[in-house]
Length: 237
Image 1 (cartoon, rainbow, N blue to C red):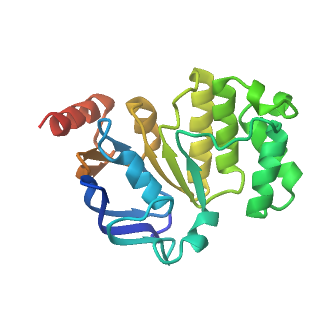
Image 2 (image 1 turned 180 degrees about the horizontal axis):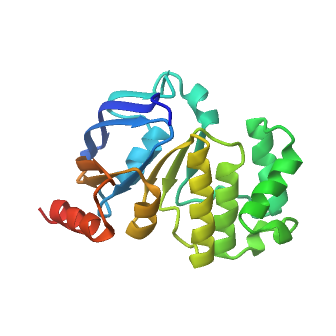
């Protein structure tokens, strides 16, 4: 595993009017590592991921991603990212195939058609490639959004509640794909309420509460029960 730092954040805060969503976040994450972020609703997890995705500018602080200044050079960082959030960013009037071809062209994916069919197979949608996305079920749309996220082989995956809307089979598919991404030195930051999925995937866990990272530690020596107890200790305190 590489010793290179993929993410370096220092003193990052974000204010929306009078509301302080993030309060002095410091975060360093090595390339090839997976960090799971857990916390109650309203803790600022989505805001943090949006800042890492260069979709929202911080009010204070510095951010470096893959050696680039995320505030001054976002255009150099975006091609390196795979972002999966609450919206699928799919076009309902296009087929699954056409959606992925569109995004593939944006990212300059080589051997595009071959790659598109490969990721469609990865998410078990190859039989629905020529079906309009508006006719997909919610779970199918989420699987296609996963395919969109992984299509260009990103160096950094930012996943906000990625298991939402997935049945057990689809969640297991996603877990397999994320394990494979990690084996290719991809770095992953994900927020989730699914402790068991996070526990089996992540190297480290951070607990976020009221806009602050109140705890961060490796998974070494933790079992699932201890992780849940650690969470309750910090959230209830």
